[in-house]
Length: 331
Ligand code: F6P
Image 1 (cartoon, rainbow, N blue to C red):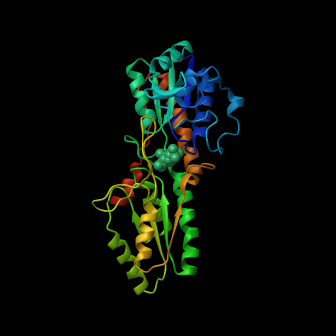
Image 2: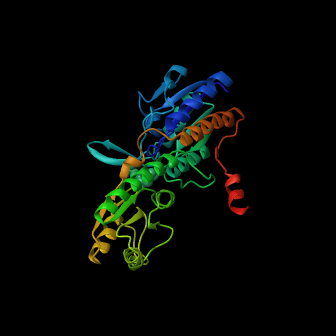
Image 3: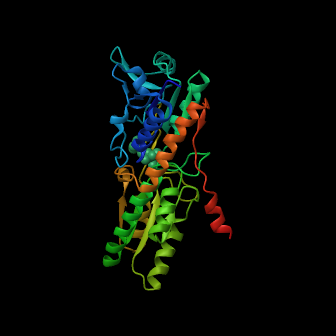
């Protein structure tokens, strides 16, 4: 193995830089192999300034740094790239250019740090000859084949802190506080942060809910003498028989943007006579320094991905399984 490439696709997640650092160190120290960084997801392959060599000095101090030194591109689908041609906006397929780029750079492997969209594209590129290896990244924790993704723990930590803070003000003002959390179609962030923060109601996409049941819980708490309630709402949650709430429709490039269910829930509760406020935590869940757990996981993933590359195991994804957790619950 002489040279590998690394790119970070899709939305960012805390821990991307830690993966890059571990991959570079493993590649150079264990295998004496060169590492090339591809900027802005797959975009770097089609841009003159899109590739940079990564040495040990380039990854110093990266462990605690959020974001990604390589840049990310949420609309980076190689099969539908938006470009301006003759003053008109059109979408084109740049997958062949990416394959050519990989060959031109003589990459023995391309580490793709991404979520479901980026990893799906990676597999498609593999079918065209690209030596890809996946590293599962997303705060949503919604990638099959692994129990956890890096970025998730940091997002849950931020969301739990938000619930803790809402608790004190909710209690002081005898209010209901609804907190809308990210996660797309997966309720893991709301579920984990909701349990960790002691939310009274947790609404997740996997279980459609009844607005009346939410209010019944708030009312029951008041009857028991608890004059405040905390509701953790996943952005993809929806009432039984209704559609998810979107703040922006999708198109060829972008998936539809979820957002607004917190307001729907808050408005309904307020309409039933309980003073309610709604907070949307948004991209705070994606920013900042990764937690120690995410740094640890990202480091293990980065090193493992390079070792997979060295063994020629392409079209694979590194993953984590927590067998001990199963034991705790069954003993
Ligand atoms: O997939 C990660 C995620 O943060 C989702 O939880 C959220 O729905 C989406 O990305 C937001 O995307 P964007 O950064 O494009 O607004």
